[in-house]
Every structure is written in structure tokens, then in C-alpha cells.
Length: 90
Image (cartoon, rainbow, N blue to C red; front, side, top):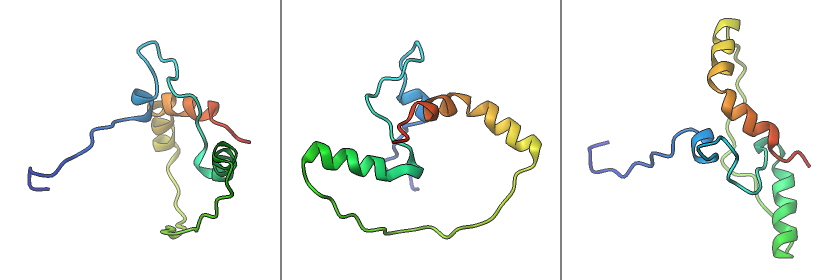
């Protein structure tokens, strides 16, 4: 980046998805690992059948975190986990 680039400073999901009282401000949240529920929602909303292609798929990599790092991440990401738990699963 050379200083002329436009950068989006969206920040953490917990900051832009909640208000100052930590209440979720979005109407509907879908889980990434269940994108089919999002597709069904869109088809019902638009009254159209959507045929989406699976493009730009990342390679599957195996990795492991130490229990200490995993605990620190879970503590740091607690607000995101709370939002995730409210997301649609069906």
C-alpha cells in the first residue's frame, strides 16, 4: 500500500453488528458453514431459483493450536462467538 489506497476499516464483527448496549443490530445472520440456508432465504425472498457455482475454493489445510493460544483466542473472540450462536442454522 502506498498511502493512496482506499482501505475499509470495518473492524470486528462484534463492533459493527451491535449497538452500544451490545444488542445485535442486524435482522438476519447466516452461518458461513451453512450457506445453503442463506441460499434458501434468497430464493424465497426473490421467488427465483438460484444456481450458484462454487468458485475460489481454498485448499483444506490441517493445523492445530496450542491449548493456551486457543483459550486466548476464545476469550478475545467472545463477542463474535455470542453473535455466531444467534446465527441461523436452518
